[in-house]
Image (cartoon, rainbow, N blue to C red):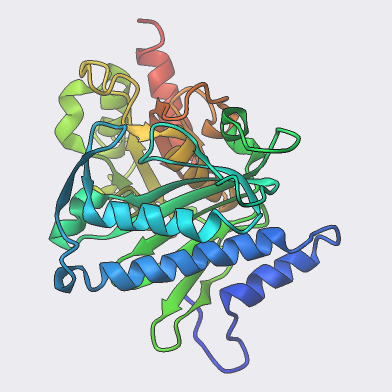
Length: 346
């Protein structure tokens, strides 16, 4: 497991300092991306301050709204969604945004300038856990626009994960952590509430070579393909090939992914071929699978839909769903092997 930093006055590195130091490696950088990342960190601080006081602020529970996914919108979902949009709609850094909570792209208001970046985000992943005080998170991805000028377009949002400039997430749990990668390793920052700043706590995260846990909702096993069932048997050591991995599952994607990243193992949410509601899985390619896959790739791991790298998939729809297997490369490739042997011949 990647040990956190032990702080002294000499080695305190704020997220702003870290981003600026990364910028120095790119002489052509204008500072726009740096400012955008810092605005996302600010959004994380604000959302964290509200989630930690949710029970005192009448923002627990659900609204009367249903989002594009057909899910009831929680009050904190709306707060997080509005916070991220309003912090970024007027800066002149972004051409267009898209949120898991909205059916269509989110244009920049006409009165503001548009920029060269595209922001995709899941404002509050795991929001069904809010009322139970379980960990939740924000996931984001940043791309360069592909349109030349003016208002951003749907095509700007429908880019393969390998084109990503920055992927990140913010975990609101026993502490608040921001983990991101700009293609130069994966780095984690913990919010120090006494000074209101994210401090570098997990530099250059690498997924441990020895996997420890597997994470999956086995309540849906009746819907899985034969290949996924055989792969799960493998992880449980039923064929005697490996020592069984321990099962851990929270049901909050960011939290389950974060544990996998730091401890080693695999998280998966396969296609539920026998369930008409989830024939291609539950997770969204643009808002969840792509940014987390990018982060894992930069930490030495691998992510797949069971057949190919998640980062190679060219999106066709804004809310496209995909199966996701992410973690240690050898385990993800073993999942691909079982699916190839048992499912692809069907």
